[in-house]
Image (cartoon, rainbow over all chains, first blue to last red; front, top):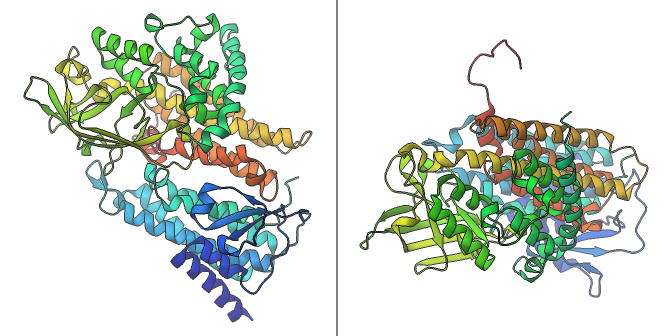
Amino acid sequence: MRENTRDTIDRCEDAGYADGLAAGLALALDGTSPGPAPGGIAALPANAVPGGSAVIPHVMAAREGIVFLRQEPAAPATATGPAAFCARLGAARLGVTRRLADCVLAHLTGRSSGGEPILRKQLVQGTLADARVTTEVARRALLVGGASTAAVADVHDRLTVLDWELAKLLGAAGYAGESAAREVFVSRLTAGCWLPRVRVT
Amino acid sequence: MTGLDPALRELRDQSRHIAAELRALALPLDADPQDTAPLLDSPALELLRHTGTPRRFRSAAIPRWAEEFTAGCLGRVVANIELARGDASVLNACAAPSLAGFTVDALGDKAQQEFFYEELAKHRSWTFFAMTEPEHGSDATGMETRLTPGPDGGHRLNGTKRYVANAARGSIGVVFARTGPTPLSIRAALLRLPAPGFTGSALEMTGLRGACIGEMTFDDVSVPRERVLGAHLPASRRGLWGANRAFNVVRLQIAAQALGVAYAMCDLVRADRPGWTGHEVVSARLDAARELLYDTALSVDTRPDNRYPPSLAKLHTTALAVETGRWAEAALGPAALLHHPLLEKWCRDVGAFEFMDGTSNVLRLTIAPSAAPRREGR
């Protein structure tokens, strides 16, 4: 059972890493039904959207092959939900986070500031080291916490934070023009659609 | 607490009124930042343009309360918080002197200031401040853009700048370039565009799209001798270092805008959930940050060369704005960012403040103590 779960989680992460968010999401959805989106808006790979759907236009998402569509009526948000699917989605997001980390390393390699290679700056090294730790811990948390919606949501939240910490290392290059940082924002929006998050009380 | 005097309270209140006009432009501008007609038609932006212009160069009078905006750093902070609470992207789309104006004020002689501001008044121009380069960011030690002597007694400008606001649509501004190998040889040139050899292009931005950030390429662009700023100043004050005071003010303005967006996000949550008390911790954090900015503004007015206070303020409020976005998303439940397009936009917008005028890591290097603490006072 655990091996099956691990295999699924690994494959979703690999798809997100190798082919991007849409591919990872497609694999996360493969063979499972996430049920109605808890907020009444589903995020799907563009090639899985039924014709005539009520699509919410979103330029950044469209470029990543993700479509948001309204589902009526919205399912009531509950504390229990499709944790297993959300764990798969978390793995796909983890792969996307690793793509971003690769972009950061590629961007920083060869760059210097004040005459010193940026990759040797302690503040940068600290962020990259912490990113590796968070990545390894998140993978295990998805594996063991896959039955707990709260545990899976926690992983998603930590990935959102990590994505921003990594994107910051790209500076303006992560914000203007083509950038992997755009994909992680869509990744955040996608998670927001599927996590059965109860409004904080 | 830093109590605001009556004049500043009126500036704050009037800025809130203007902010509502900025808010109305926010989503259309995000969808199509190249559509400038609504910006040029906006009375609010027109007022802000005149307000940001030094009094002697204004082509129209402004209300008395608006004079407080530029009377000191505290006025700028008070106004920027409230205006960004309307929408920071629209605020950054204003065709105002902005950072180029600060630089011309600090480094330009009387004739250069007249040239710059008269051009602005005549053409309602967007301005540019070209410092950052593709390979070196804002690291001045690595700057490659060069200003070299030309055959006509003037200069030739060659190089590429990237992540410059109004790069493609600005018609006057300043470009920093190297005239020699040392940091003191970095000078600012006043440039009017279009010009032969210049190419400007806009970049697709994740957020704060009103700023229209882009790339500028200079291929042997002619710069008359009289357009190089700072010739009348001592060598140590002619270039980058002469503009440091201006950078301090701008850094604090950006900090204020980040806080303004954070307030906007909190406002949205409170409006969606009337009576809910779960905002209290966040609201308290925002109010504390506002106090920090007010205190910092006063310190910038008294010690304008001290880079530490504005760096600390910007480091805090940029992070706070990002965190407030995540909190608002969680507070509003599933698909919150898609149910609330303004919140989604603001969550993208706040990312821009991270790299404007110093990233968090650059600011940390300014803030970190470099010696054992002194025992007296704080």
